[in-house]
Amino acid sequence: MVSTTMTVVDGFPRAIERSLLRLKDAATAQSRLPSLGKPYWFTLLVLAAATVLVLALFIGNLTTMVDFATIVSFLTAPILGYLNLKAITSPEVAPEHRPSKSMLLLSWVGLVVLVGFGAIYVASLF
Image (cartoon, rainbow, N blue to C red; front, side, top):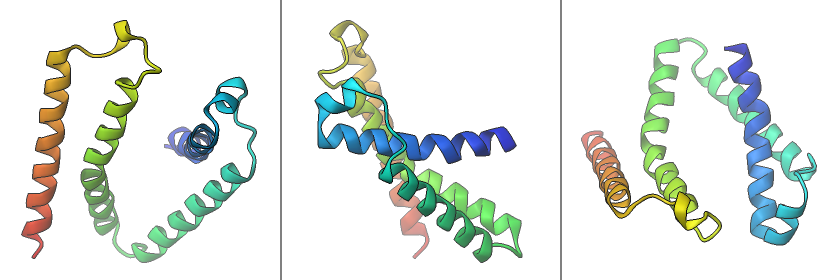
């Protein structure tokens, strides 16, 4: 768990920084590695604050904290799946490395199922 935690704490801010560089200027993002600049440190601080907040809210009940993490993961899965699909089908991926039409269809079906289950879950809360 310690190595997983350290990987997330370092990797998540690096990924955010790289994404912001990419959105700002694709040519610059391709020409150099992320610099551990302001976006990295800002994301690291936000991640630390969110962690402290979650731990403070659920300090008395570990089961509730695990339930919360599971729900958040479940509801963000369609968003992350869509972003992954957009990345692998982008022009930056060589055509021979992109998924086939049948795999794309399966991906879209999977996204619809994820959104559907998320909607059913949210509707069941009310």
